[in-house]
Length: 165
Image (cartoon, rainbow, N blue to C red):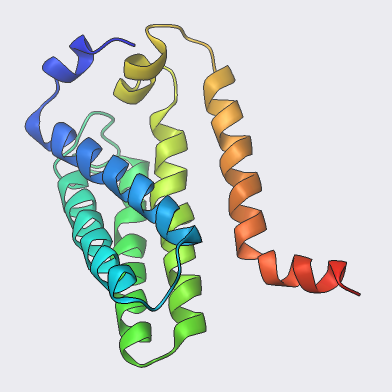
């Protein structure tokens, strides 16, 4: 682990990293915690605030310019904003299943995919966790893990229903 990479990181990167890691941890817990409780609602709002911070801090992170100061990973931002808003709108309208699907999509699409992309060799998170190695192996392992867990959670009900036949 090379913590020097954080010492030299710009403030938006540090804010983004803290908010994203907070959301990954809290969201992971919330996937398994009891739903609909007051604690779930409080943690849900904390997660929404964390996601908003992660989303908007991403606007100020630049490095691989593609269109102006933005890179292809910035294309996730409008989808993340729409997903966050949609999940809030769904639960306020008592559409629990739609809310669940929106939040799962947010967790895996707006956190999981960028997390795997941030693990690419040369990126700060890769250097922080794995040092200066140029190997793709950690990225591939995380991608397979995230895809497997995400697919299971997405189709959990269908899998259980099929297995009970």
